Structure formats: C-alpha cells, structure tokens
Image 1 (tube, rainbow, N blue to C red):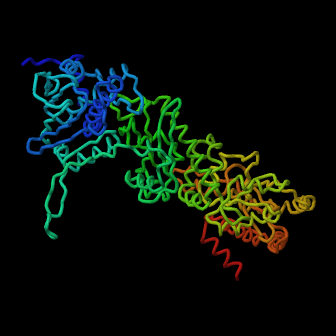
Image 2 (cartoon, one colour):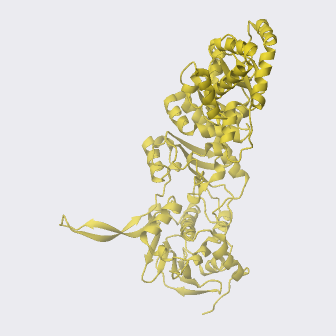
Length: 625
C-alpha cells in the first residue's frame, strides 16, 4: 500500500487548517454535512441533463452515526460519490474544491445552490479525529475506494467493497486531554444540538438513531429505552416558504423555536429580495426589552445563513445600534465568505443588505405607528430610548431615518405624540417647537417656566428621558421648525408690555446687579422674567447647555464639571418682589438672605442639588423668627 503525500505544501497547510482557520471545533460537523448535501445536489443537477437519471428527493438523505465504545463518528450520504481520481484530486489536494469546480461548470439554479467553495471544510475533521476514513462509490462506477489519513503525514487510497452509491466518512475521535473534551462528539444530545444549530435547514433529511423512553407494550407502569431513527433537521426553512401560506402562529413558533425571546413579538417582517443581491430575511420586533439589553453582555445581531447553513450566530454588521433590539435571521447566496465560513469579508453585498434591512425596519415601524398606535406605544415604551440614542450617537446623521419614529408626551393631548402631529397643530404665529425637561410628567407640569408658553396656547413636549434633550440638540429642527426649551433665554414670544418691562429693567438695575454680586459665580445674570405669571422666581439658561443637560452630565463618571450659564429670573408682579425692593432700600443684610433663599428655591424647583443644605435651613429659620 503506497502512502501518498498531500500536495500544495501539505504539512504546513494542513496544520493551519486544523489549528488556525476555525474558532470552534464543532464546526467540523457543519462542514461535513454541507459537503454531503453538495454531493446529493450534484445528482440533482446531473439528472437535469441526463435522461437516464431520475431525481426523487425522498430517496436521498444524510445519516449521522456514533459509537462510543469504538470512538467513531460516521457521516453517510447517498450523494454522487467519488471515483479514485476524484478522491485523489479533491481530498489529496488541499484547498481544491470539487464542489466549486462543479458549480463553475454547471448552471446552478432552482435554489439548489452548491455550498462548498474553498475545499478546506473536509479537513476540519482532523480537529477532532486522529484518523479520517472515506469510503466512496461514484455514480455509474462498479468499484468503491477507501481514502484514509492520519493527518499531515499523507493518505492512502485502496479499492474496497460498498454496495450503494454515495460516501461514508468515519472519524476516529481523539482521546480526551486535560484541556480538551472530545467525548462530547460521541453524545447524542450534543450531536443533535450541533445539527440543529448549523444544519437545520439543509434541504435533505439528516437522520440519526436516537434513544427514546417509551412505555412497554401491555404495561401502564413500565418503560424502556427504544432506539429509533429520527430526522433531526427541519429541512425547509420558513423564510423560503410562500408568505401567503404562513400564519402569525407560524412566525411566533419560529420565534420561540429559535429562542429569540420568551415574549411574543409585536411584529414580524418577512423579506424576500431577488435583485442586485439576493437574500431572504425574517425579522422580529420584540414585545419586551431583554433583561440585559443595556448591559455590556448584550450582543446585537442577526443570525446569518448562507444557503441555509448557519455562518454566524450574531452578525452585528447587519443591524445599526439604534435597531439593535431587532431579532431574526438573514439567508443569502451572494455573500463573500472568508475561508472558515465563520466570519464575513466586509464587502458591498453585506453593506447593501444591512442598508435595505434598516430601511425596511423603519418602514414597518412607521406602518405600525399609523395602523396600530397601541402596539407601537408598547414597543416605544420598551425601545424608544434606543431610537433617541441613535439620533444622538450618530450626530444627527440618521435624522431622516429616525425622526418620524420618535414620540413625546404632549401638554395638550396628555399622551404621546409624534413630531409630525405636533407640527401639524402649530398656530401660524408659533415660531418654535417648545419643550420642557424634568424627571417626570408631574414635575414638568409644575414648572414655572411653562407658564407663558402655555398661556399663549402653545403645545409643549415633555422630555423625561435623560437622553431626550441631547437627541433633540442633534436633531436641531423638524420640518424647518427649531426646537426651543421653555427655559431658554429667548422664547420668541412677543410681549405686549415690552416697553414697560424695559423701563422696569432700568429702574431695578442696581437691585439686580447687587443680587448678582451676592450670588457671585452661581449665576450669569439676574433679570426680570417675561415668562412667569404666578411663580416668584425661576432659573433659565443662556447658551447650549441647559439645566437638565447639566444634571445628566454631572451624574456621569469622569464628568468635566460642565455647568449651564444660569440666569435667575424674578417675577416683578409677585409680592415677593416688593419684599426684595424693601430690603434693597432698608436692609442689605436681609436682601442677601432673600437672594440666597430665592436662588435655592429655584434650584429645588429644577431638581438640582442645593450647594449648602445646612445654610439653606438656617436661612429659613431666620425668616421664621
């Protein structure tokens, strides 16, 4: 028996195949089953042009057998088989793919896409096996041959006996080591789970003898273990079925089977594209937020298949961060895979699929918003924060994609409204989209700054999420309407008493200057308020940083002590102002007391911390006595 050496720098190349290309040992079973599927497909294509052949799919299968005592694992197929020359050329020359050559010579269509491309998948068997034996009988041949190898030292090819056409691969599984457990590939449950994970949608039945616990005939209390042959894989993936034949229950069952979540999805999206890049996808909008969604452990991404074979569990490149809550899968025949078929090359096809998926998700969410408002609000309560984060995180570049999906609580409607709904109700004289920020709707309702805007009959959006105002700053405008905080310096509301207020400003300039001096660096300015009606005092801001943004930034680790430029506004029509004037004229010490109290009162209204709580309580006691 002649031992033949591998070609193509075999020892070095095979060593690389075994130790470097694949990140997980379990991949070997996926590769061998994919090769078996290709072997059956080749008979199908041959039958298309050979009238002497008929192809009945029911006669073709892949069988997985294991024997713990002998430490062997077999993968048997009823495919086209290999001649002696093909065994030597396809298995003796590493990185030569018989499937790829067949694909190049054959007009592949009808969804029977050949899987193999690189001619290296077979050698992944050496990751788990000391000896690999291949017995094959080619279609139309009377003789079978056995190919056998222990790895890089070479291989042998000898004639052998085999009745049926097809290939039988036997792996002599390695013994366990301190670091590696190879016994798992001789366990029924483990083999079943690998097949379901990677090869569930191979189009031919993958059979395996399994042990089932069954009731003994004629006995109600006795049970026995019975070995029976079962088909492990589903074969026909749901995404290749006609949408019209599928029900919501079918999609929900698929969602549960794939363990995308324990909830019921709010919506499913079934996509079939046959254009510049061909792909199928089934996407789900979950009902509930995963418990680890905002943790570092959460992984976004869709399952990625190539011709029904799982390539990646989580392909993050298919989803932008703002749609990271979407679950589901994509299957494409046109992807450029790397040699291990575990990761993708960053190519045009992948980016195009991702772009199309993003647009489709946006379109379906918009439809849900219009057609089933209650369901959309359920979704938004779970994942609206992520949409707003998407606007902020990408510096407004996704404005057109995300802005119509945002909802905020409305002071007028007393419910969540979209920006489009807000703008459609704006009076002609309203210049801005007004918003107010706070920890809760109840707290914003009581803000003094909202009085003049509400008095004009203008709608106010309530921002209660810490991300809201940051996102809006990136959005800047909606339908050419600028966003304006009710706490900003200029509200853009014309005041009929403008001349009178200017006179008051001049008259009380010395008082306000002294109050500013008392407060030192705490405020940029003290001035008459144009927005207060019933409240005596409030804080507003000049500049881009608002009071709510200051709160958020201060709560962040490693904050840079960024502060808003605060302005203390005084209501000159309130009784408190008379007390300020009196103290200014007669008792400067009391003015200091009043000024500090009003400033701290304004901080409390905004939910900001008081600099010195003890001093504040002492000041209250002084007033009381």
